[in-house]
Amino acid sequence: MSNLLPLIQNETLKIWKKKRFFVILLILAILIPIFTYAQMRMAENNKDKFADWRSQIIQQIADYQNALTSDRIPEEWKKYRRIMVQQLTYYLENDVDPSAPNAVTFTRGFMNNAVTLFIPLLVLSIGSDLISGERSSGTIKMLLTRPVRRWKILFAKLVALIFYISLTIISTLILCYAISGIFFGYGGWNLPVFTGFVINGAEVDSSGVHAVPHWLYIMMQAGLAWFSAVIVGLLSMMVSVLVRSTAASIVTMMATIIAGTILSNMASAWDTAKYIFSVNLQLTGYLDGSPPPIEGMTMLFSIGVLGVWGLIALIISFGVFTKQDILN
Amino acid sequence: MNNRPKGSAALWRIIAGAASLATLLLLFGFAYAVNDVLNPAAPAPAPGAPALDGQQPLLGSKEELKIVAIGDSLTKGTGDATGQGYVRRVVTGLAQKMDSQVKLVNNLAINGLRTEQLIDKLQHDTGMKYALKQADLILFTIGGNDLSKLAQTALRSDSANPDFGVEEIGKQLQDGLGRLDQVFKLVNEANPDAQIVYVGLYNPFYPIPELREGSLQVQKWNDEAYRLSFSYPHMKLVPVFDLFEDPGGTYLASDRFHPNGEGYAHIAERIVQMLH
Image (cartoon, rainbow over all chains, first blue to last red; front, side):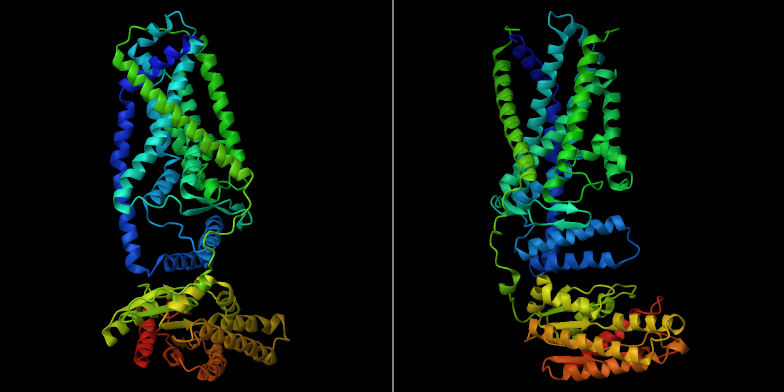
């Protein structure tokens, strides 16, 4: 146990020195202003067209209802719109603006959209390099010839990885808030957000709906995003143990994650797809009550599926890493 | 490993501290979220629970004329390739005629809406009530789908259901008009001060000789609708049936049911003409 802490310190500093984390911050610092600008243009456009946010929501509801009357639109999409209509009506009847333009709302929206693809990609940039990076640079032999048990080395890498995942998520939040606040203002921490919509088919059960302040909602959202990110991290570590080169390991993981997003958009008829980890990444959707990619999925189910994937990844990583022969 | 430079030890402490704090915070958020979804807190009374009914719409500068449109596909503008329908054309037409600001607040028309559905919306849809309350001018159409449904049942019944005769059609027409009466009442109640324009019905099947007789039923509807509207001081009925009494169906869209762009333009013209 005594030599675990220096190992973690070593791995943490190694990742820091590789400047991967700076790249992540840089990407965020460049992308967030772009999204902020797009969002601002949209808000300005709506401001011109509508008297107030209520008129805007009322129009949105009417538009969804019109889409519902069209025979050309697939039943699956209609279901989504029916749910949206019921939720928007709930917001309207309680006189709460679901998208009041401020930095906190922007942060919430950004996290919600980033959780399936953007954050996993950022995590990959660190996780996929963990072992295969050592291999391609040859430092793995140095590492393993030390008088330290192999599982301890991998464990230290794992802790360092989780450290950086946490830092990534928190930095995303902070950067989002700081940058979008310049345009939208920094208020909105205590605005209510509704959570607890239960979706049964196309009906929304709003009996359990309750309001939480915005800051708490964002905490919950970030926590769920973090869990998804950690699972992606564990899987990328496993691939990085199995695959020799960093590039191959990043590509493998990226392909599965992108496949997941595509699947959750189109494969709602293929029931078994719900056991694929990348279909379950959008945990934040269960908070705002957006319909799950495949009917019948619940938050507990998704956390369970992700948990099992994570566990398997851990077992394989440690199993292989401790036994593996290091050649060349 | 103890012979590291001092700087990197400090760096390690900062990273480890920040990262542990972040991890704890996120773990808390995760646990809270899972708990919140599994054991939802008792639904708190909504924060500022004043329903929209009690809300006084922000009446901006009165120089601006606010229009709200409700009803069926005619108001929606279905069939118009430009997507303007008569509503947007009325907005531009009025702006020119009155030389003032005219703003479409909402067009809440929904394709295929029938009278009973509109009654339900007028009674229970707080959003629609809120929109209507803001309006200086309310444009609406309703009843076309009631009548065309009636026509379809009558057509099919010729062979399958011989009981469905003239009497039945007359009775259903009366029921429909009873609902129209209620619609008029509800719209007027929703905003007693606004100018209200009801666009009359036309017979889209006029070009089909066997269905031309439908015009008589349509006319019965318009006649009764005029009588009903007469008792409301702010309400006007704009007739448009004559535009579509053309065997060639010049003003009908390709679906042979809705007006085309030109047809909508003429409807809009008439509305603009009668508003002062």
